[in-house]
Length: 326
Length: 256
Image (cartoon, rainbow over all chains, first blue to last red; front, side):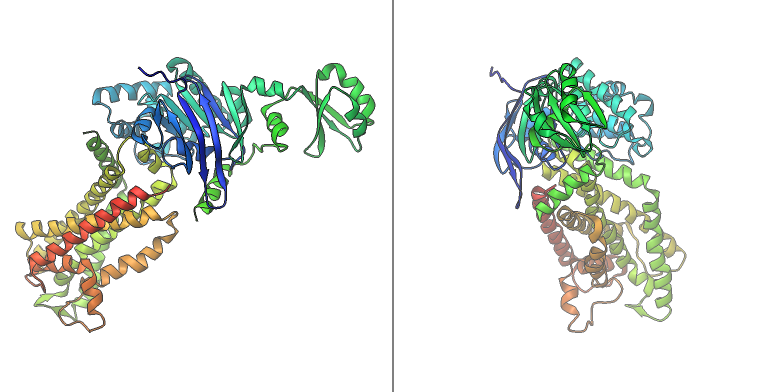
């Protein structure tokens, strides 16, 4: 019996398109039962990574193993070990929810009895039992997502991939989906890999996450650890003029960076030092202290902010891959 | 064994979807009726070929027209499956791409043959009503015609899938209509006899596989044909085989 240390491991996984490297020598190790996040702005290479892992796109170089199987050499065995919920709708609208699930059972060659049992099980899990005989066309966006989540689980995959699971959903549906995902990880000990560009989603769900930018891992760790590594709290100052030189001399001010036309300081024990800081900077219009978020982590490591409010996000990423194909 | 269930799944989906989309079923009845009654009736008042009236003459051609339009577009519609992520959901399942292709062909052929069956019923009614005298709808002629139509359909669905697997967006639909579907239809002898063609036109007609399907069906239904039945059938089978082979290859290479 071979024991695999990691349920998923990538080895220099790389995808090059003609003019750009979408994924650049990615090395990841993911343990069984983890909820792992790939966080990054649109076009960072998250979806491309995912499509390679689920064997839909071949890597240019490098490879990965899932459940001990190589994604390049044993794609069939990899496919049996995984489930995926795609970013765009992938259920048939003209069929009912139940029929979509039945179709999935057939595609995965499940015995009839098991298939019907599982359909009942997953429908209960996502609260869609009473709507199972309605056509998917009549579902709301959140319901459709839940159906697709249920479908991804039906064959009890070892690893479940979720590509932007709550993209375009209203806040209430997002909370719902999050609860389902958390329960799954707990109850089924399933390894879940999520790509997202929502900071709050990554923060809430993930045991560990990798922040990806330009196809490379910028930093990897638990959300708590990453926020701690920023090195203090964030003080945000709004003012006409600031005495930056004086600020730089203070030993506990770790970082000074512009944010949205204002200035953000990373400060150790901000509560204690606030008064001193306000004394040296001069006249200010407003001040705000908060604990760091993953947004600050991203800013800290890349010098840029992730924009959370880009509804056309998936589109931009697609357009990029589309133009890269030509 | 595992592949069979997957193929069945794809067939089931296509057939269910077809039967639920009433607009497609209705247009598959109306379109040929318009051709038979208006073009057939209008032109038929002035011309007749091979000893039968024009409507009767073009009936085999209209059968092929239905197969042509429905099959090619069925195939090309995988662009939609690709546009939403339905295609990915199928391709990420543990089944071979060849099986996915087979499932698609069977689904498309079922859709098309269901429409053909409706056309047979229309043929019967028009024959019994005296509008298409001379049409021989016998068990033998229907069976042979079905064999021709099945082969043509499988080849044509493959053509559609080959094009669809290479397309990235549905914007090219109109081009396919103008440069593929209409020429294949008009150059098949569906609407005129192919015995005394002008020299420049003949090569196009004889290069078109649909010509042999029309000729074969016309042979058994009207007793008029240019080639022998076996020759016609051999050529349409060859067409189906080649297209299925190319299609399987195109599907394996399909990028998402």
